Length: 51
Image (cartoon, rainbow, N blue to C red; front, side, top):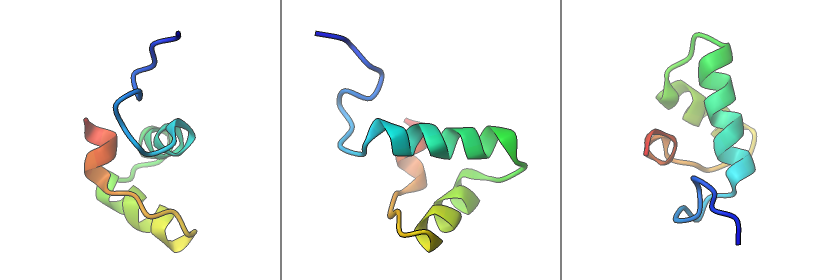
């Protein structure tokens, strides 16, 4: 069994990794990343990425 940092989160790890990458690569806040992902059909709360 591999232990991932996302094992207790229901959101797919790929989505969290994308959100983190966007907030690091571009000068966006996590709330802006949340809005951008929502526009593309991904409903995620910014708090999911910060935990």
